[in-house]
Length: 130
Image 1 (cartoon, rainbow, N blue to C red):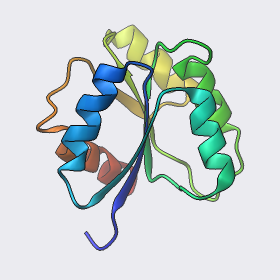
Image 2 (cartoon, one colour):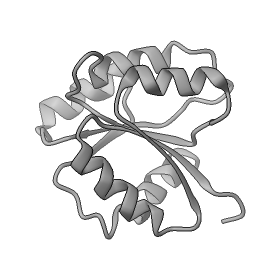
Image 3 (cartoon, rainbow, N blue to C red):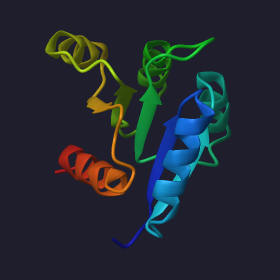
Image 4 (tube, rainbow, N blue to C red):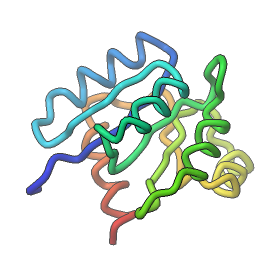
């Protein structure tokens, strides 16, 4: 990979964020921005200093839910459609279909294996850019 894969990760749970930061931090080809709220994610993107290749968003967050953040991200002017994946423990087929209808590219279910997370995200990104 010539350029680093830029990942935006938004989750209000400190423990989960720390695990993701540690797991993805081991991969030198990944640049991670890990934030605790949808508002912080939108503020970061407004500055233009970080342009993610893929976003992973927790579904259940206080203040701004994952669905609300998805809607705001989808309504931003962008030359490229950002692949957005929900991080959720709810992986019923009806939920997956509903998330797709809302504009999510897919889900990553909790709990996930931190040791294979980077490979999984890279695979999802490639699927969206094939």
